[in-house]
Length: 202
Length: 136
Image (cartoon, rainbow over all chains, first blue to last red; front, side):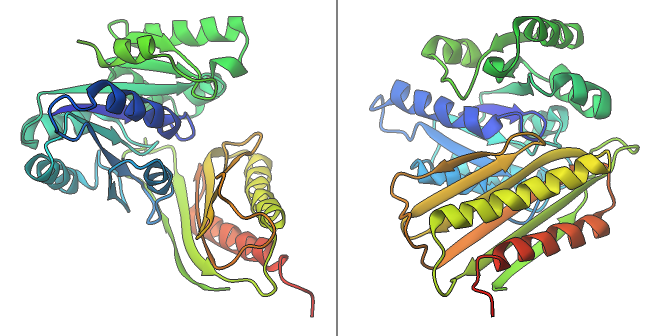
């Protein structure tokens, strides 16, 4: 199983991007070997889940982890969930959506250490281009951890900012994490397969 | 108001100088007479706007405010992060009358104490949904 971990501040568009990526992976792997292509793990800090219902409406297989964050409070639950998925389904891909307040490093560490059947974890940080300048000031330590812990950074909502702002955001991301691949996209306008190929890598 | 539950929690991972409050609630409702989809959407949109305006007035950061209404005929989703409220309605949704439905809400505000936020979010949600009922 390969794991793609979605992190990014609240409202950045994680669920909106996870949905088309899941569709892309389903179509890409369809009928290859009979294994289920994608299972999603949805984490909500509150006790009520909204995003998992949306994903299920699209016919996707979703596991829920409520009432805390998998980066600090639900690490054992995350381990159990991944290991159950491996034992029961063993899909090609597991997409994990962290809460908007989660940081990637502890999650990746948990999966690397305890996750069974995991070949590789790719961390995708989703950035809200509209709110970047505000968030990098107000919740700077959190956003910094999310960006610096990412393998790929998706600068989202590019349709809602002008070219200068987009350049500024991209520079800011690169200054924090020069080794990450950076893709610019808009979940609202649709994401092409070439972008998803870049995100998931070889 | 209906059966359901609501919670407010904090988060361990945020830096110490930043507080966050999470309000979530799930309510199973059936309005008599039934509301229309547009009036229900307007009421819940109003709730999101009220939370956002209140946060802005206090100089607080809106993490997100999300609403999902589910019924036998589909769903309505609403969300906001401090600015415009976006909405999606499933194609199968019946617009003229909403039968029994479940409404789930989640709101996260950064920079506030949980108790005051819980009271505000809960009270304003109850008021928003009560406006759908006929006056006595």
